[in-house]
Image (tube, rainbow, N blue to C red):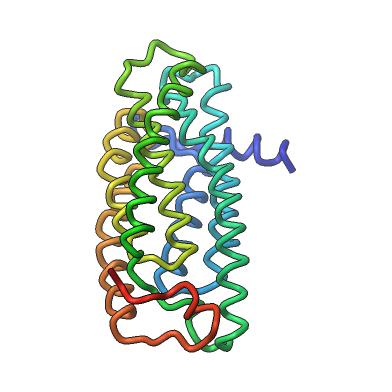
Length: 239
């Protein structure tokens, strides 16, 4: 399986001066499907997202090992966060599936809500503290090229924001869409700079998509009522 993914990651088509990697294209399209499922609060969004994470891990890690690395900057944060995505997504998959059992297969898995002030403060605090720690860790490991200091801060911002956005989605917090907007504001320029064009285009599309998804979840949080015990435990009044 690993050999197959490695060969697939090397397959590409030439588009002008850019080599479009099939694995990268497939990964971002599957990731988009997962995002749509998340907006609709479907349990299947999680395993689909995990599939995209596995594929994109090979895209980014292959850039580190690729002898033509000069064409595409190796993003350690991007590759490393795929592993944490898988772990966090496994939690979200379990949590949404448990909620779905109490609601029925014909209903959305969860009822969105705003995080409480305490939860929101913890989310921001973990992001900021994690940013400082992770950028130093990335700088210590190195990028395999003489990367400027801002590069590690950007990569760490994307790493922490993506991880916390996935966790907030698992909890059913509206704030997870806002986290993704914060990630996109840094992620799109960095991916363009690093020559990951399809992924950058996907993130740019996400910037529009997350606004729509945020509106959808916000409307649901105002109109829907939690109907099972597990929802009532995680859906207190918005702060």
